[in-house]
Length: 373
Image (cartoon, rainbow, N blue to C red; front, side):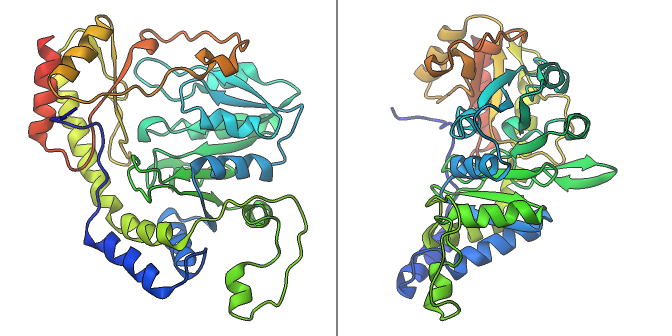
């Protein structure tokens, strides 16, 4: 298909190309000094103590669940509206995932009141997903977690550099809960192709994550290469979730550009809101949010009617769309969850194009076609 407006595009230039070439010239490809630099830069941007770059966002979520000691017999509360990895990562541990609804058609993030109703003696943790780059109500979620002695995992795959007031101060999303998880998949606001990051302010969790990321080994290849260690012990179960230098090099350059890329996304989504607000068939989630500290990742709308026909007409006009997401409990692998959403039109989610290479004219074209249907 020759799209006139694509759903997403990576924003790369010669900076990333040069960074990759320099890795190739260096001859060191495994997790090394560039990864350390990437982690340090990310920690500084988020204002968090510990950052661990990993192979992808799913690995980040798995490590978060494992570090928190989640296991068979436990339950983890997760939003029904998220990518399946948010739930799968808890299931890897043997835990049961229990699904909570969104707040409303205007706010698609997980509902704190729904969370509290699902808590029982088996509940171990809450996974809060910052859907589309819009933060969950972390003040209320953390209060619930403290009240019931639960851990909180922040799935911040859509929310790199998003911020939110917490206890009167502005905090980066991903740094408020016990562990924050990020994805740098190629459609994300910053990308490395594949890649992710686990962050925490807790020293005890950092030690566990560091070990589990690389086979439970007490020293890394780079340390032995530099002579800082002559051997290693394996002191626990671990995984090969290490990122490589190529992806870290791209991440360093992408992180530098991210504030400007996020600002462009905020400008484009505001334009969408203005042009679609009078369409009686379109519901605009998050339209009333203050966008200043958000990181719009997707332009999700809900259609009250005419869903399939609308998608087809947009496609015929060269406009690529997607859906974020089908509710996880609707998948065969999660049958038997007994979840029913109370959100009107939640099954009619439609993702419109949104990326920094778009122009306002592109947004106007999409809205012109959509408003004409």
